[in-house]
Amino acid sequence: MVESASQNLRGRITIATSQPIVFCKDIHLSAHIIDGRAAAERLRRRVAEHTAGLKPQGLIPGLAVVLVGEDPASQIYVGSKTRQATEAGIRHFDHRLPATTSTAELIALVRNLNANPEVHGILVQLPLPAGVDSAAVLATIDPEKDVDGFHAMNAGRLALGEPATVPCTPLGCLILIREVMSDMAGKRALVIGRSNIVGKPMAQLLLQNDCTVTIAHSKTRDLPALCAEAEILVAAVGRPRSIEGGWIRPGAVVIDVGINRIDDGSGKSKVVGDVDYATAVTRAGAITPVPGGVGPMTIACLLLNTVNAAIRQRLGTNAETLRI
Ligand code: NDP
Image 1 (cartoon, rainbow, N blue to C red):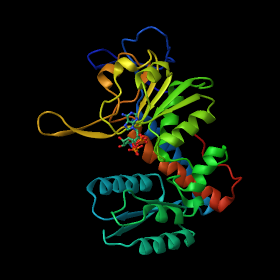
Image 2 (cartoon, rainbow, N blue to C red; image 1 turned 30 degrees about the horizontal axis):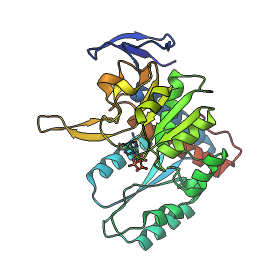
Image 3 (cartoon, rainbow, N blue to C red; image 1 turned 135 degrees about the horizontal axis):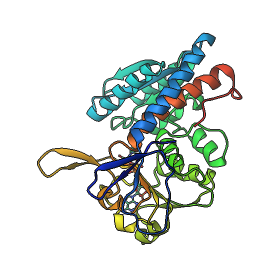
Image 4 (cartoon, helix red, strand yellow; image 1 turned 120 degrees about the vertical axis):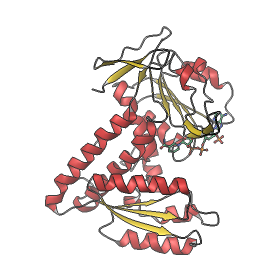
């Protein structure tokens, strides 16, 4: 059971409770705040315990991280990924390459990593520098080592409902939804955004969980009307605070994937989501904050995918993996 917290209208966390959340149709004055940091920590702990259990069998999951160029945000992400991998008992292999690296050189590196039995997961940090054929590089990754779940083989398996490695961010969103909604069957779910890394796989996961799924995008008409129907709303738009609180169905579960850096008015920058949190928190039944919601789950799910890839590669596709 998640530790739940209620938040009053002034935005202060006031109550901690382990009671199940009650959703009602009336207007909510406060939403349950879904704590992504705590959920990610729990998942990382489970991964670490599982990894420790594999050691006596001589299996140490290995993650290769390929970073090309000097993009500061990518360097921070990669630093967090490798640190958290180490803490979870996952061996990491860093490949930091200059921005001048060619597509052919990257493909050659990925082929080497595909052939390395100590490497069970390969992560090529995006975006790659302009001029590199990202699609060709990602397509070279062995689908069994594709821990980001971006390979066409994994996207296809997910769409067919077959066992697949699922992209980390939507997988993290699903875990957070389940924390507050044990039975999703028949729920009306709206995914705003249709990218290959978030929106589309998110919609597939909701469908697999028996939701009735709508996908909205930049050409969608009357988005507020769709939001008003949604019992589960996942926003992956990339536009700061563009989903207004007044659009949200009272009691809905709102998952905000957006990470948008804006000026805080004093010349400094701050990170906000795609949902207007201040107004949404007064209508939603449960909501993820930004930061501290979906973001921390992404790396935790990467670790989960890596351990499961190691298990399948060493012990066979029918071996027991770590389930969410
Ligand atoms: P993309 O830019 O690839 O996709 C954005 C989607 O939003 C597109 O499908 C686009 O539609 C749609 N969209 C744009 N404007 C509107 C609009 N006015 N109404 C409805 N839909 C609209 O972004 P990503 O999916 O990669 O990322 C989305 C957000 O999630 C970003 O803020 C990103 O930073 C964040 N993110 C966070 C992660 C995390 O770990 N928490 C990981 C990955 C992303 P169309 O297809 O028609 O252009």
